[in-house]
Amino acid sequence: MKYVSTRGKAPILSFEEAMLTGLARDGGLYVPESVPELSKADIAALAGLPYEEVAFRIMRPFIGDTFTESEFADIIARAYSGFGHAARAPLVQTGANQFLLELFHGPTLAFKDFAMQMIGQMFEAALKRRGDRVTIIGATSGDTGSAAIEAFRGLDAVDVFILFPYGRVSEVQRRQMTTPSEDNVHALALDGDFDDCQARVKDAFNHFDFRDRVRLAGVNSINWARVLAQVVYYFTAATALGAPYRKVSFTVPTGNFGDIFAGYIARRMGLPIDKLVIATNRNDILHRTMETGAYTKAGVDPTISPSMDIQVSSNFERVLFDVYDRDGSAVADQMKMLSDTGSFPISQGALGRLRELFESGRASEDETTATIAAMFRNSGEILCPHTAVGAKVALEKADPSVPMVTLATAHPAKFPDAVEAAMGLRPPLPNRMSDLYERPERVTRVTNDLAAIETLIEEKISA
View 1 (cartoon, rainbow, N blue to C red):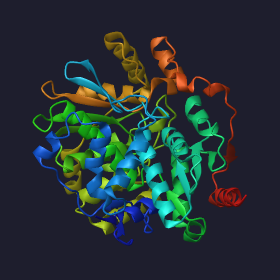
View 2: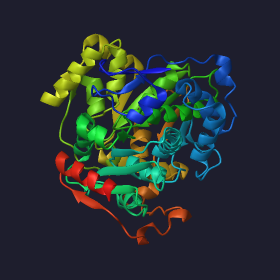
View 3: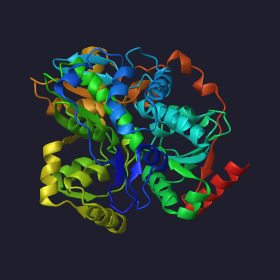
């Protein structure tokens, strides 16, 4: 299996090389040259298997000879050993043909743990074999950062630096990033919003002298291995609901497009997904793009669903590559236009393909709050505000004859203020995190300046 850049001018890499590289040197994102398809019999055989076995079968065709079968099975076992539910990603029914896929039973209570725990173990195994050490830099709107720090803390082969927007994440999200004490992990609070954090990370990758000097690697959803790990739970959910002999729909609350792109890959592998629905909060650039055919940035408004407060959805580039018939030059031109003007148009042909692949919707702040209250009243389930965005849109897009699965992306206790305001009860943290508010914090505030960030990173890794 080989990997190519969405902009068409970077070297073609193996899975291991693409994983350790992250962002391609032409600024693009790596995607597989082809997507393996599973037969109906292959998909049917997944029903009832342990999550780890499904993960092995789904991911194995993509990794080539990076790991032996026994090595890869051990990596998967280690990755999910710290999850708090035996099913890893259990389904909960909330209404007639309406389901939640609970993705918050990992170490940091968010869906990012499914990918980050995997990539942490894969990085460590590959780097130890190569005798290498890398510097990981990532940007987060809340959940990616804590998941990355948790996955890499204390590992021998990596230093980790996570940029998060100062004052724009929940207290639980912040403390999950700032309370680990291991010397190899660093939380950096940047003066700006998430898009600024993401832009500085991409700038660092495109500063090749710095990139090579510190052996830079990325674990944001720009990293293909992150997307690949998320494909798995679409299969476990769909087969539990009758696939491949029954279609299943998914609604995905998303800002960066990575989680729903994983669903798109699952569909290309043969999973009979009826609808893939993009759910956005009021920072609704993805919904507006689907409606208007133009990707146009607007200001980022802070919301009660902060992990979706994004205007530059980096993984959207991956699906553009496909709907433009894998024309890297066309994608590169659009990304340059976005950088120069803050907007780009989508051709009618490509837009038509996007609308065949995805539907979209949005939820206002009031609608998000009302959905949290209604879900608790009607089913007893407590939603985080991101999941509530998805649940509101899912009800609008549902076909009564097809199961609709909303991805429950985070534990409600990560956003206690928003949940309490909606339903009058404050969701408690799980017992294993009950002392989170008492742990000392360790954080460095940084200006929105690439040179200052690079200097700080070099000082920290040489200390």
